[in-house]
Amino acid sequence: MFIQSHDAIILGAGAAGLMCAATAGRRGRRVLLLDHADRPGKKILISGGGRCNFTNIGTTPDRFLSANPHFARSALGRYTPADFLALVESYGIAWHEKTLGQLFCDGSARQIVDMLLDECAKGAVEIALGRPITGIDHGDGMFRVTVDGRPHAAPALVIATGGPSIPKMGATGFAYDVARRFGLKVVEPRPGLVPLTLGGDELLFRELSGVATDVVASCGKARFREAALLTHRGLSGPAILQISSYWRHGEPILLDFLPDADAPALLRAAKRARPRAGLASVLAEHLPQRLAAALAARLGVAGELGAMTDKALDSAGQQLGGWRFLPNGTEGYAKAEVTLGGIATANLSQRTLGATGVPGLHAIGEAVDVTGWLGGYNFQWAWASGRAAGDVL
Image (cartoon, rainbow, N blue to C red; front, side, top):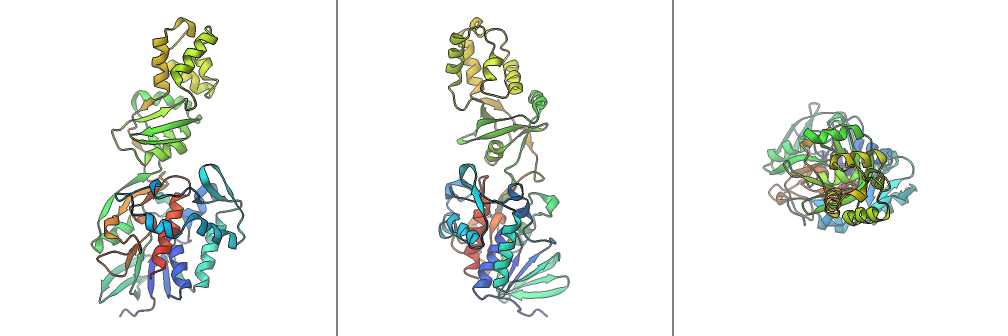
């Protein structure tokens, strides 16, 4: 027989689940936090090279992808990067800002996990790890969850198990299975913030594996200026991870290899200043030498610039300013930092993250169809959505 032993059961002890549990627990709610993993906050621990890029001070709703681009506005507006930073500082955790508003721990990501666990402890949250869920049911206003044959019941259930990105850490599509069980729709999930793969003639760039350079990557109307990294499988680096979230199969990716220059004008000026110079040597002043030589060779430009027509230089410059790649895929969930898509926001309240047709059911964090840019945005969504749900459990 199921007996109500808690006010809320939260599935998933990641960033969103820990924040939600701590928030509800400190409000006096009896909370049970469950996870099949043997440790809480596994993604937190590996993020930011082990230093956790825990938020971004530039967080705004337009830096999140969703079928409803306005959905995240409410939660993000009520729990801001400044709010989370205040919590971090209250624990004496030293931090620093990197480029583009990214905030990291000076020490270890473990500090963030320990902070959240301490917040849970202050709220007397019961945490059960390494235990698979064998049953979930709902009736008479109660959610019933069976763990290791032991029944638990509560009037509120929170789905915070994330998406299937990084399966080697135990990530699965469990959140979507639970959501569908309760009649919630799921926006088709796909890997996000993920390296892109190349084939055909573009595999010639494999010889440059390990070379990185600053670019502007674009796909449709989306544009990001950061580093791109050439790999043995294709393209990676921050600029590529960012643009991957906007890319769809069959679409080209354009890279501007000379983002600080008007490439045709630069080549014309070089021709007049140094007519005996070759294209590769001119490009090597702005790009890694190996990349400069490979691009010049791919353009078929040999000999001295002075022997070339301005029309030919303009054509080469235009290609350098918008080099077209046609990816044949991605490196999949194994290398994806996040999952795009997820539990449809049309089913959820912007204010509480509660399911509109199933009272007491909530979905938060990466499980939901809200995905941020690279650089701490997805953690801020985890904190904000976790707080929004925790405030009403």
